[in-house]
Image 1 (tube, one colour):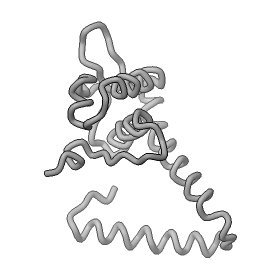
Image 2: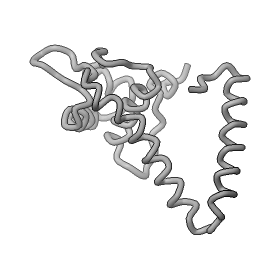
Image 3: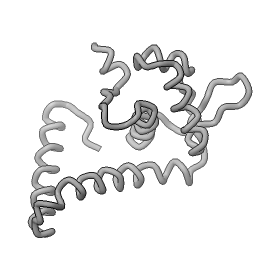
Length: 139
């Protein structure tokens, strides 16, 4: 197993790493890999596993605390929030962000929306079938 598979994150150079770490946690919540109240690694542990600077891990945790995504009380380990309002908004936020990026990237082609929806449906269905055939998660 590679380090990338262990951490589940492959960083890109287009956006700050701490933002990508926050999105990684949101994706884990949205897919049920972590749940409300679950403990998360310490900042140092996260930095080591993800091979990022500890200051970057600290910045990601600070951002998640500001968003209400995690709660840290005293010297206790940080935990995923139990606020259902925040947790239920994560999936919608991730979908909207992905759709917005897709629209920006495709808009100049000026494809009719019906044709675009058909292409997306076909591709999405095909990808889900491939993932299922490979034993992947198709949520």
